[in-house]
Length: 465
Image (cartoon, rainbow, N blue to C red; front, side, top):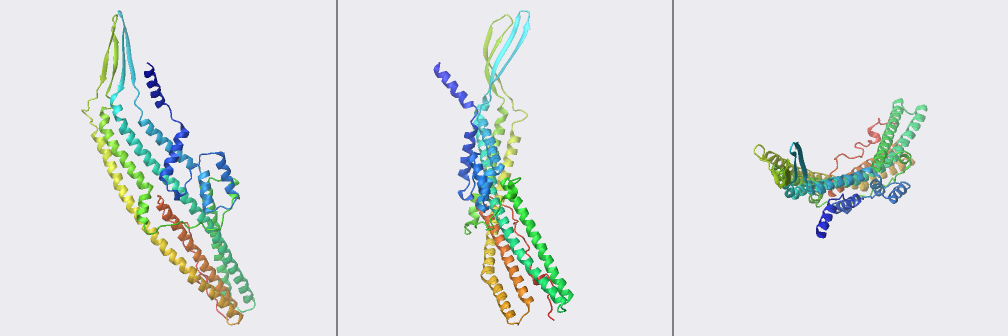
């Protein structure tokens, strides 16, 4: 008797609702196991100390690293993703549960007395389908984990790109302000020369046009900074006074370490989308087996008792057996098989696309690194030397003041070009970093595609008189 009670207690304990905290902690551990440590993903537990840490981060200028931490502390999508995994985990636990038995009965009253029938039925086939249902739910849970891991790593990459764009916008504003000031000085000088009769009206209008263009470019840079700030606010879930009082570092996020020799194999092996597609195909293949067996799912057996009017109770058993004459489950099984094969084909197509993106990004990075190296080591020093020599010739009264100003404007234009090239390079590097950590981001980058051309390309050249 005691042994039977103990077995019943264990059975009821196994059917009890699981603890939510335990489930979420286990899913955090599963995510940490599949997400590379280099991805920088943090999974907070919602403690008060974490909110204090977030507030402390906002008191200092945001960098790429501090913004990433802030995003994982503040963004509600992080906890929502964990809760979604809890839903998938509950589906797995539910798949392992046995269908409840059914109690049925009827009563009819006659002159001789009531006729009573009582029966207890249990779906027998469902007991044997539990392993298949668990296998399907486990594959779906693993697919869900891969999907959530993709989203979390994507958040980490987006935080770095947002910090990069904001720092780049601030540096872009500083350069555009310098170009505006240089253009304003040229306008003032040209105005004096025009009044003295040493310059034509067309020259004065040309300088004013250059100043107007410089102001427009500065306004565009300020607008881009505002957009970049809002991207940070959205990622870090900031609003109200918090959204307007924080500051950001002008230093660009440190370039990630990249292995450019094995980008294809690393990108494919780490990709979460491919992992998700594999598990989805596995779940569909299991579903095909379930579809075949489901025609017998209504088979049930159990004890039954009946009492005839005025008679005694009769005890026995009863069963219900479906007859698969019209539907043998083959249609549903074949449909699941077709869908599984389609998922596998798309898995192959996605792998090809990922390899192509890895090669493209690597080649762009190598080209941009060479371009930036040339700008820094050759073009910018030559442009600066030209400005210095022009100034020396001006001091020797061999060139006019406008040649000096033009040389300085062209030097600022070269610095602007170098900045845009560096921003494009950093953007591509973080995109490849994300790819090597399992996530394929969009191709478009946040840098300004068409930096402002040199002064000599936008305004007429002044003629000396």
